[in-house]
Length: 114
Length: 118
Image 1: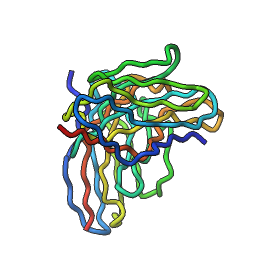
Image 2: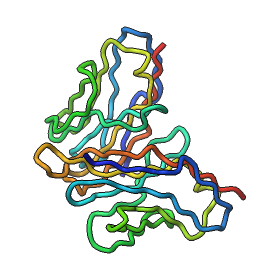
Image 3: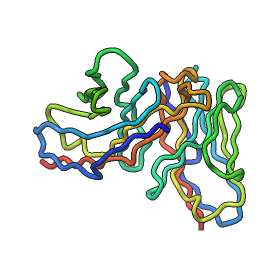
Image 4: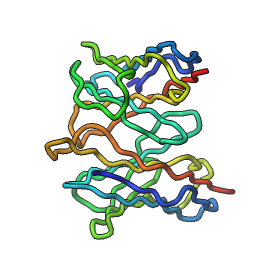
C-alpha cells in the first residue's frame, strides 16, 4: 500500500506570495493532519481534518488554512508568506480520528521563503 | 496542558551497545504516547505507541519502550545499537480537547539526535 504522498517536495517563494501544498493520505485513511517543523520551534500542529471537516486547529495565524476533499486528499494554503514560514511541512494520515490511532507521515514539503 | 520532554539533545552510543533515549510526559487523563524517528531529509516514521496494557511496548526495527506511570516516563530502548539507527527521535503525546477528551493532534518533544559510532 502506498504511503502518504506530498507535493511538491521543494518550493521556493518570495515574501508576500501565497502557496498551496498537497497531501494524499494512505488509501482508506480518512483523517489528515498537518504539522510545521522548524529548527527553532520544532514540530507544531497546524490542523486536522476528518471527512472534509476541520476537527482541530493549532495556534497559527489565519494566513494558514486548509481543506479536505471527498477523496480524503488535503491541501493547505499559506497566504502573504513571511520569512518565518520557511519550514518543512509534514502531512500525516490515520485510518480514523480516534486518539489511539497511529498517524503516518509523508516525506514533507520543504518551503523556503526569500 | 499535555507535554513531553526529551531531556537530552544528543545521545552518543557505540555500535553494539544498548541505547536509551529518554522521554518524560505530563498529561491530564490517560497518556497516549508515541515514538517516531526522522532520518535526514525525510518525514517521520512511526516506531511504537503505548495506549494501554503491557508497560513494555515492542516496535519496529528492534526498538521497545517502557511505560512507567510512577516516573511519568516513556523511554525508548534497543539492546544493541546499529550505525543505521543514527537519526532524530521524537517522543509525542496526544493532545486533549477543551472537554478533556483526547483528540487527534500530537504534541512532540524537541527531539533527541542519536549518533551511533562504529
